[in-house]
Image 1 (cartoon, rainbow, N blue to C red):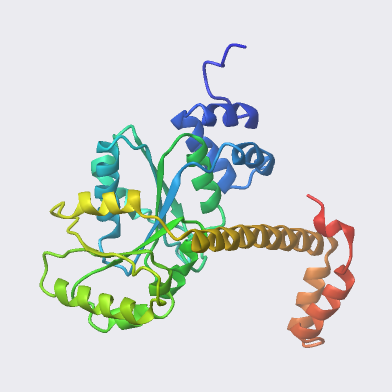
Image 2: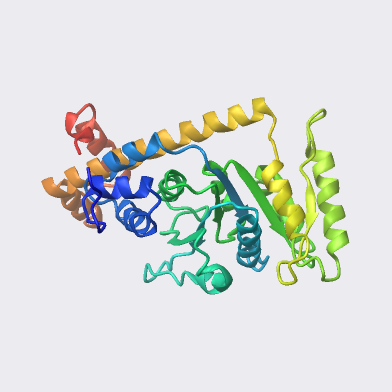
Length: 327
């Protein structure tokens, strides 16, 4: 059967073109999946069986660590080595307007026109951890389209960045000289999720001290018999240390038992997250359509009922109802 000359809006055509590696189709499908357009789940079911080959690398760290510039340099080096790269650059959403600057695109000008690189900016949509629920789906679409490496660069919001580990095979923590006690602040939570540590802007004074601090922390926190995560120095601005970093990223192997445990946790979290979203959406729609939510809001404002009693009553009414799971 002859392929269509242009990409149309039907899901079947989009899936076919994505699997064929067509960039426009990939961009269009990502947008429609992010927007949760009707039919998105069936499309992702078709994509799922074709995914699983790409290596997903999370890049996290505090604001100002140079994550975007480093991501750009890593992508360039990967392309030089013959890799096809997908980049998910996550920017924070304004809590007031719901808008997002998507400024990572401004900092990745050098690879805009590189055909082997596909960049997708995403807004956090107010989620802690800097990853929207759709980020995992976006990575899967890039994977199915033929990307070898997918880089997820997060917003840099501190310990909530632990969310990135739920979508990545490998997590890279970026630190910089001059953080001082900031390294200590990062230790609880974020430090524990990283597989590789990078001291970026290593041409600045204090890089050796930061490297020593991180090395000491890792030596104390690592379990006996387990390898200590590598700590590397780079300068994205001067392109120093990038080749060694990329070589480490491509060859890094997690212990099989840890890798299996991580994959099980990722799968469990994804299933529960999807269930949570679907149940919430179903309940919200049901309460809105029936007028029960508006009635409950009015009772609460008028002080006729407290919110705790309202929630208990609504849950009792909804308990076991089949409509909770209707599309």
